[in-house]
Amino acid sequence: MKQYLALCQRIIDEGQWVENERTGKRCLTLINADLEYDVANNQFPLITTRKSFWKAAIAEFLGYIRGFDNAADFRQLGTKTWDANANDNQAWLNNPARKGPDDMGRVYGVQGRSWQKPDGSGFDQLAKIVDNLSNKKDDRGEILTFYNPGEFDLGCLRPCMHTHTFSLLGDTLYLTSYQRSCDVPLGLNFNQIQVFTFLALMAQITGNKAGKAYHKIVNAHIYEDQLPMMRDVQLKREPFPSPQLNINPDIKSLKDLETWVTMDDFEVVGYQHHDPIKYPFAV
Image (cartoon, rainbow, N blue to C red; front, side, top):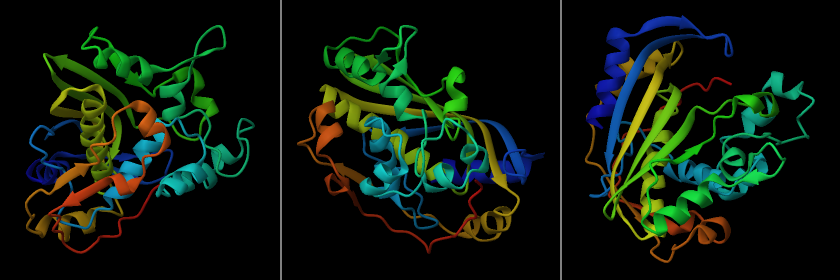
């Protein structure tokens, strides 16, 4: 919580106003932020100065792991995070690549599980990483990337948190995640939860110990219509201690994550929080 609140305050103190072309809104913007999460000691980075809906964040990342390309599949897992970008983004609605309602196109997990090779076949980045780490191998290229500039026109949104690099030292697994753009009041805690949970899950299914997760953000911003609530409400609240995340120990493989895992296999213990804050969402 301390590093989260410090980043919010830093944006307010040091940020510069930028007009965002996609949303038509101004953002108070800061370049370069670094966060880290202690996965080894299960210090789950769940925001306590407002209620955070952690299940939706984990459900979304589980959808990425499964390579989903349809908002309906995400809803079935327990999250509506892709409804707006799939169905309310006018540029995507006008795109001939869109297949119909709820279609997201070739974004996020599609790239991670079926990157298009020159011969037309798909390459499963995540399966390669899981196989290597399970065999205690780190080729210094255990990289999962969702960022495919050649196919930006085939999806509803460029990925924000776009690349995850795993590093294995002995039997301890580390993760470094890169994010090009971050809506700090609304989206950051989703991303924090996902980085933490991704390392915890990957360590568990590859038979390694989880170390630390490092989260690098390039463009961290607060939208103009979010600023009063952040400055005058959330930053004035006292944080509670960090909770813990319990993951079903029966999850032992990538196939498990692809098939039977649901939100019932995750539990947060000791979560104290202040009242929710309804920050506006920019499509």
